[in-house]
Image (cartoon, rainbow, N blue to C red):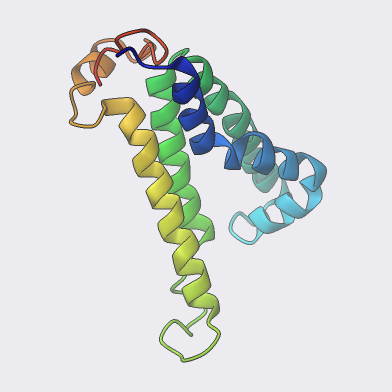
Length: 157
């Protein structure tokens, strides 16, 4: 039985759809709001703007690499790092101080978003290293190489 490329692209798209097009589109349409949110962490407006522009570039270019298979392992590694960084920087569940309170809790809401970011990072790492890590040597030997996700027999899987 040969793998169906349509299934491969569908699975990869499910992994990146949050970023491309939705989060990237939101950053584009609501650029001022995104910069304002970034200013909560990076107070200088110029730095906050640079952070949002970098995030926007990541959210467009890395999913395209993952979907096309062009340097997809490196793109997935960058997305994993991006997910972890945004979790730590913007999903700071420990700050509201209401994590253990009964009823509504801003801290618990942020905690679930924090975990979702790390779960996405894990999904991206599967593209980078494969299910059992077999793709890691190939990635280290050729970081810009492709995992050939739509080939009849994908290496490193």
